[in-house]
Length: 448
Ligand SMILES: *Cc1c(COP(=O)(O)O)cnc(C)c1O
Image 1 (cartoon, rainbow, N blue to C red):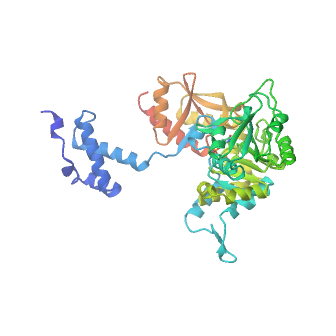
Image 2 (tube, rainbow, N blue to C red; image 1 turned 180 degrees about the horizontal axis):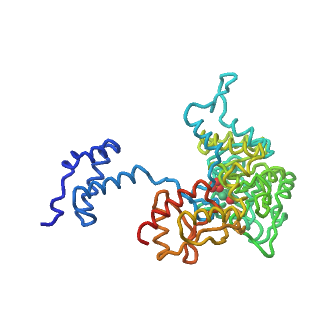
């Protein structure tokens, strides 16, 4: 007789002790659904057609469903700010702030001294202004939202002049021309791909309301015969001709690039000091905080953004405000390089990364420690080489092992390059090495 004919009905399986335990843990509906799916799979010839095997398969399905898909990952790619892996890991103070502010009520929109209504914007405003040197500041959902808000508030129906060399696409769908259009403004392109002069902007200014938009080319570099107007020049031009100046700075570097071993690039305090009306940047790139879009600059411009109806739709939530405040406090104390994991991982010298690799090698008993080149990531500093080190593993099938690592527990995302498998430890914390060794141990305990 075909054993599949003897497959039990769901009704009889639910009487089993092990299934009752599943119901207790996952709920009746989810358990019944998983049993049905497991029986169906066994009927169609996948898997063992016995009641025990069906329960094992259902248990696995339920565990996967309970775990969800937004799971922690060990980032062994060597890309420190990996957009697909959530960019900046938070520092201890930011994690504590989220736990503290999330576990009870917080003074989000109340003025405690008077008991009257307060503003959620007050929280980030003070510290963000102090740390960046700006007159005022606000927090939106991400940099794209902050730029959309800036253009919507400062340039409704206005002409927005942008250099042809700065009409960039960032990430999958963030395109400057589209953001300008969505903000209800009209894009005016000036200059050429490689050269745009101040005179090009000046010629494009008319009597109509105009915003000068400068965009940091964060995710690509131009070399050769290039020319661009500096932010200072644009601010001076804007002052002369009555145009607001908005600067999309992108990565939100708060310290000098050299202090974290990177080529110098525009930083936030410098951009604010040049006098732009609004400087927009991300919270989760080189700033090292939570996903957020920060807009800092002149009081009147930021206030116009805060009053715009889109502000409510694009504002940051209380947990983001909590994590951001704790992150900015590290800058204020002068401890950002030690306390913020993104910066700490970028400044660590290669020797310490190699030492971590040696520790991993000793634990897994295979592979070779090699020098590698890591990246900043998240479209920031695309040409900067960050010296790093990795454990290179010789395996039969690189893709199969990489797949098992990604689907393991904990999930590990390695780097595959030139047909070889690398675990680059530039972006791996010291206290993750043990878990990484465990994940590798599980794979190599099997036959590979
Ligand atoms: C990354 C980046 C953005 C988008 O930032 P999000 O916070 O992801 O919205 C916008 N502009 C520039 C120049 C960037 O580098």
